[in-house]
Every structure is written in C-alpha cells, then in structure tokens.
Image (cartoon, rainbow, N blue to C red; front, top):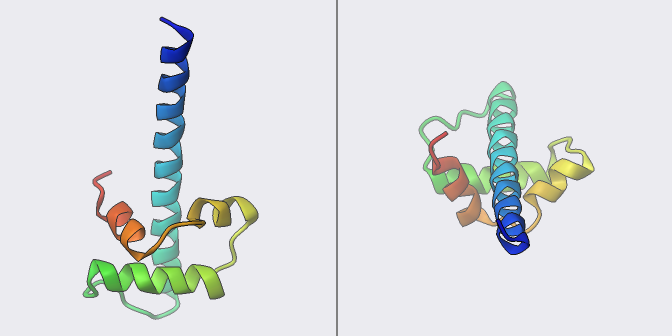
Length: 86
C-alpha cells in the first residue's frame, strides 16, 4: 500500500470517527433537552436541529472538544446527522 493510500484511509477513518462523535453528542443533547421538559418527539427534524443549535450555543454545558465538534454545523447539517442510521 502506498503512503498516499494509507493517508487517505486514515483520513477516512478520522472523518468517520468525528461523524460518530457528533451524532453521539447530538443524541446526548436531545436527552438533556428531554430531561428539561421540552418534548422533541413530535417535532420535525428541522425543528429539532434548530432547537439543538440554540441549546448548544446558549444553554448546554459543553467542553471545548464538544464545542469544536459542533463548530461550523448549521441546521441542515444537524438534521442530516440526526437522520443517519447508526
């Protein structure tokens, strides 16, 4: 295997890991929101994504690594992540 192929494979694995961490973080935020009494069960994916963006930005207690995972994501990105099968 060439060095370029190894680097590409490593980059793919890293991207997959970041995506999985984002999904787990978003699922945790949904759980936190539910504990706070806000029911997202019947909300559309776009409504959930909008609420999570606001929650993560203003009320959630996230460490620097968790904030970095969400940096640059918009409502559409979050909706797509939430829609992915595990």
